[in-house]
Image (cartoon, rainbow, N blue to C red; front, side):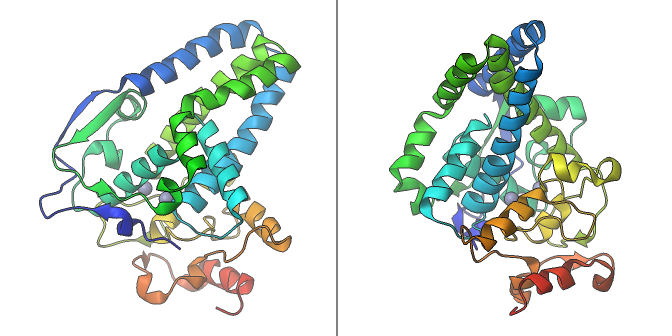
Length: 321
Ligand SMILES: [Zn+2]
Ligand SMILES: [Zn+2]
């Protein structure tokens, strides 16, 4: 279990308000280039096979890579697993197209730290209008005048594989692209690489926008300037599409928890995968709200806990705690 704040080095003058927004060429051109390739080749050479490749790769990469490999394992250390599985998860997470392991940890930790302050720039709080926030997240970068430093852990700085992933981040799509071309055609490449990257980046941004602006909250964190919201979508279906990442109010309340959907209708496929892996011994020491020591709980429940079902089910899974 990793406390994000352990990695943040800041001084009394550090703040997350003063800074300059500017164009981020790599991020902007990456997104735009894939968008153009997808709407030209992807639409003219559409096939069910190409769409199937897009779907299968999206499920594997977003669930196994983004949610489990990068977010729940690399960033939060919310469970333990063999090194090869942690590396494979980071590899899949790199394939999302948002960045390598160092980039993702830095972006996550800076945002997390900023949202804990009284005030933070709209780049971090995502409290701008949808079009402006889209511009922020997909085309611009924020350079803080006096921002904190991120102290990367040894598991990144001393792992040659993680350094290799970071250095070759954009090239990692090429082997998959070649396989897609050999198996199908350029339509498969357009959907399996470019369409997937554009839809993943757009979905990640849009869920992030809703998760900091709209949706029910079961917890409130008095010391944090920005609150997270759960984003159920119709019939709580976003739980499936985001593999559990849409339960962002729960994540703000229990960032160290490997389980994000805490109540019966909060579908959390990422957690289901972890539970299945736990049964066959691939992962262990899963952190849940029930296993986090009470002195580390900084959220106040907004509804009586007995109505949530969260604590009882967590306790059922980890009876010893
Ligand atoms: Zn958040
Ligand atoms: Zn997080």
